[in-house]
Image 1 (spheres, rainbow, N blue to C red):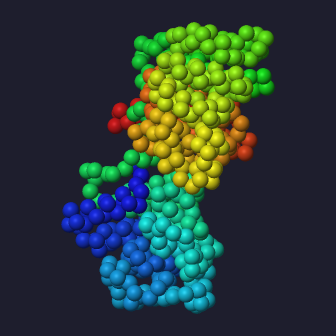
Image 2 (tube, rainbow, N blue to C red; image 1 turned 180 degrees about the vertical axis):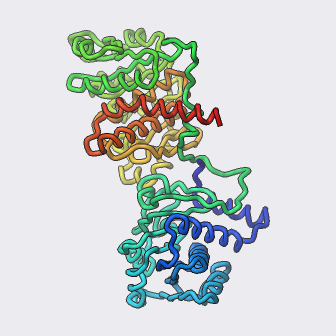
Image 3 (tube, rainbow, N blue to C red; image 1 turned 45 degrees about the horizontal axis):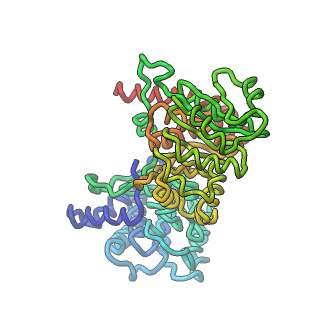
Length: 519
């Protein structure tokens, strides 16, 4: 599903009005009536007290259409207008006059001194419709609008936001000082990026999209919300006559003394995600222990038994890569200067797709130029702290615009960047970005990223492109986490639980694909 920015949405509106000839007041009517329809279908509010809090712009006009339709469907409706009716212009003024002509009470609020006169309306409302700001908000919320948002959030009513919760950035999902916390957001034409990335998705509640007759031939968007349909179409195929060689061989360079679990989780996740063969490349001192812990996996030493890896081990590692289809490197590897030098030299030579995670990224914090030298497109999977070390940006700067951050460095590093966290972002060097809706807070646990590395490496080895492997891997990884959380809860969830539910997640994807084919 494509996601738009505020400016892209304005362009779609312009095309509908100027190129197609749909009157703007008709678009407003479709938006407001569609919102009212969703409220009626969800809560059957006949006889309920509905309060519409409207700003002075087009979003307020949409809210006034909602007020009229709710009134005509039997609700008791009042409007709190943050301004004076005489100051409204265009389509908003048309709909204010229509609401007034029907006898809907409209209370004008011109300053904070007027709020005591309407406090009772907020307290008694069963449903509050937030129509203060639309998608064009680009400044901090202050004054009477801030007070109105505070009153909405303090209410016990069900809260519906028109197009987007007021105070939320449509482009980044950041809160502009204060934002409405909605139970339902009814957005128009297309969903917006800020409604699905962090922290915006937490403010939107359920999101419904209303068709307002916008042209659909050329949607100017390079950002997508991942869903089952996209993922099943881009997962690597499983030919019936395939064998273990058909489904690829992963080499995972992972682990060090004290961090053996990282290597085991990468390998187990890769095997559970469909790779035909998985070999763990571990420091020599770990080999005896590793061999006692694995069954389906294989292992090879990437250094002699008496020491950790050094640059002189490069030839042996390249020999171990012979016949492999993907390389995963980073989880739990030794954090030494020798390992950093070895990693830089290895990445200059490797011929297969590479996924780099965890300490692999930390070691390369001052060697990011190596990313663009890797011969095949690589996948980098930083969390906010890791990408902060790689870029010099603060975590707050990164989190305030996750999509653009991932997109910028995917282009700069010529790599697919997976910016992990709530609503993980996958960005490509060509400027495409995907937002992942799966996953939960229980997955914020040690080893979860190692499991993701194994899943993506497995998909790379099976022939998926780095873009497909990253997007599908993140989605399935989150889906497995959601399935685990359903059974054991989020609080107690461990990374190995995610591995345990990978088979169920992948089976569900296969069943969905079969259902789509049947349809």
